[in-house]
Image 1 (cartoon, one colour):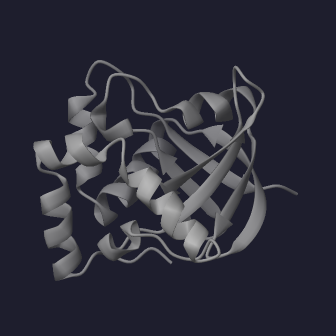
Image 2 (cartoon, helix red, strand yellow):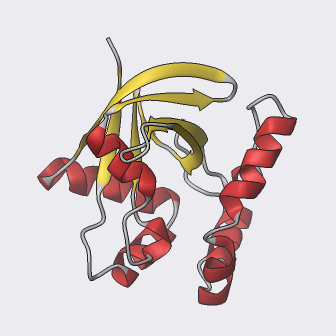
Length: 162
C-alpha cells in the first residue's frame, strides 16, 4: 500500500517542506482534509495528491476522556500502521500521541473502512525501520525531526485489535 512518490509528488513535497509553507499549513491541512473527508464519505483527502495514505485516527483524550478524530499520514506495514509524531517539528509532540500513550485503543478509518487497533511506541531497530519507511515516502519527516532536536520524535505502531 505504501508507494514511493512519483516526480510530481516529490515536487509537491519539496514545496510543502519550504519553511513558510510548512508554517502556514501545519495547523490548517488537517482541517481541509476533515472537510474533504466529510464531503466524500470518509474516502478522499487533499493530502492524497502528495501520495500519502491518509487515515482518520480516533483516540480517547488523555485529559478529557472525549473522542478525538484527526486525519494523519499512515505508514502501512501489512496490517500494522505506523504514525510519526513529528508535529511538523514543532515544540511539543502532537495531542494524539499523548492520547495513545494514555489509552492505546483506537479506531482507524481508511478509504471508508473502519478497524480497531491497539497502539504502542517503538524503540531501537523497530523505531529506525519505521522512521526510514516514513522518510522513503516523505523526506519532510527528516526535516521535521531536525527541527524537533529539543525532543524525541516518537513513532507509534497500531496493531489490529484481536
